Length: 100
Image (cartoon, rainbow, N blue to C red; front, side, top):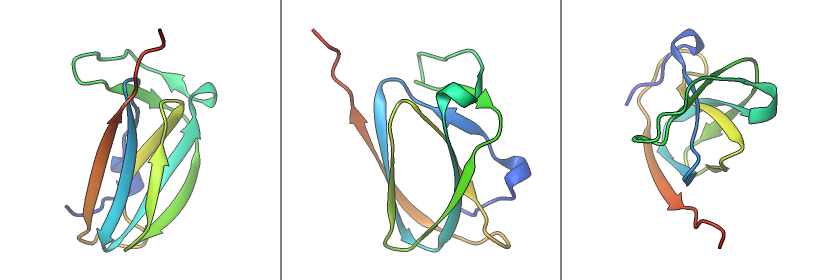
């Protein structure tokens, strides 16, 4: 996909999965923030999508790099660093087991 300007980014989190995101090629900026500092929208259980808004930090990820987002980590992936560019990324969803 092509990265996009930050104004087009969407903050998200997931309750049921850990995201492992590995950048195969290209460069991408990602936002990240702990849920406690964000304003949470209504959780959508069918898609395990937690929308949110607020301010967070940014990091640049380059080809060969990876990040891990846990359920307490809001994230906004897919942002361009300078100008939009094509990236190739693998996202692994790791299911979290419920406590018994």
